[in-house]
Image (cartoon, rainbow, N blue to C red; front, side):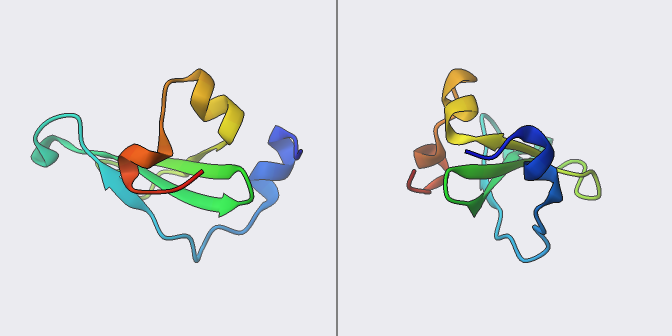
Length: 74
């Protein structure tokens, strides 16, 4: 498994982000993209120029974030 330093070394310029909204999407949404096997980038639609945070599947699970809610398979 890659460590956190390696996650930020990955090129995610071609990643396809999907939105999941907890309320009205006019308030902004969380975005998620698979960036590798068991690796994810989590962004904020209100701040599209901000660097997305990166996580392993285990870290997303510990935070209660389910990729299935975004229509993505683990």
